[in-house]
Structures are given as C-alpha cells and as structure tokens.
Amino acid sequence: MEGGSGPAFRDGEPSGARLARPGGGPYPARHARAELARAARSGFAVHQDRSERGPVAVGVPVRGEDGSAVAGLSVSMPGVRYDPRRLRSLVATLDAAARALEADLAAG
Image 1 (tube, rainbow, N blue to C red):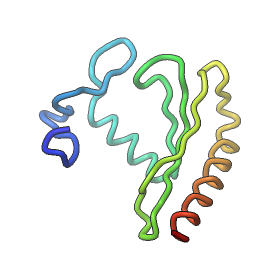
Image 2 (cartoon, rainbow, N blue to C red):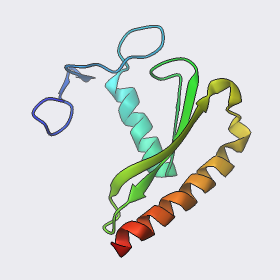
Image 3 (cartoon, rainbow, N blue to C red):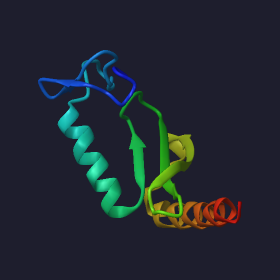
Image 4 (tube, rainbow, N blue to C red):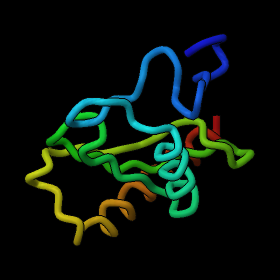
C-alpha cells in the first residue's frame, strides 16, 4: 500500500506489489473492481484460481452497526473438494455465523 490509505493505481493497475494470477502476469485492476462489485451485489465472494491454482475460498462480510464491513469470514478448501452445487449451503452457513458475530460485536 502506498500512503497508508489503500493501494495506489497507475494506468489502471495497482502500483507497488501487484496482484498475481496463475500463469504469471498482473491481475488487471478492472477485473478486481468488477469482482468487488459482484461480491457487493451478491453478499459473498468466491476465490478460485486467482492467486494460485488449487485452493478455493468462499467468504462473506461481517458488518458493524452502521452496515459497513468490519471483517470477513471465509472457509477455504482444496479445489478438488469444492462442489459449486454446495455454494448456496456454504454461503448460508457463513452468513449465519457472520450474523452471530455481528450480534456479539453489537452487544459489546
């Protein structure tokens, strides 16, 4: 990070440490922004073959009282064990756990 406030971008790509993807080369910032927008709309994200081949992670936000994301909760697994047909169930389980964490955070 540059300036301590988040990644700086030059020519549409993050400067400094670059996002890598399997097969080499940077991960274009426009793709990362599109994935973030998709995650914001759906309420979850799936990370598969982005930074390395093999592992898969599914994550949801943990929100503060104002609705902003204060943390994330995810589960990861070897790609050979990931079944996209179970995605809905994984997200539901993560959502339930995230809601419980949010209640605990709100209770102080």
